[in-house]
Amino acid sequence: MARPKGFRLSRTALQDLLDAKGILMTEAASVSGVPLSTLSGLAQGGSGASIKIVRRLAEGIACSAETLFPELAGFERPQITDPTVTAVDVRQSSVAGGAGARPVPPATGAAKAGVST
Image (cartoon, rainbow, N blue to C red; front, side):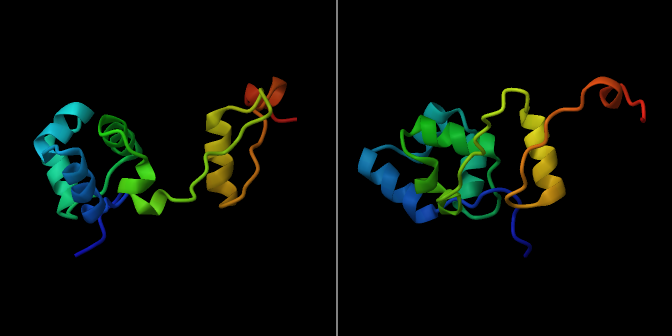
């Protein structure tokens, strides 16, 4: 069986957290807005979570994303200090240059209009 795409849920962390809070999986699904079928699939290891699901679940049951999804431990969002750099620029430069790629400023003038110089 191929590894599911997305982030892998720590089943033991989820169950320990739910037990400690005294809530059922159905309640966790309800408060987080994550469908029960999705949460069950994550808990069984049959699917991976998108970042949207990771955030909704963590916020809904009031814990850190890293607690439920250990592979996120140590993950840092890129810090953008140049106000002319957009999130799209960061994603594009990361894809092009791999880990540690520096953001590139957006195209301006003739380059932005698609005119070569």
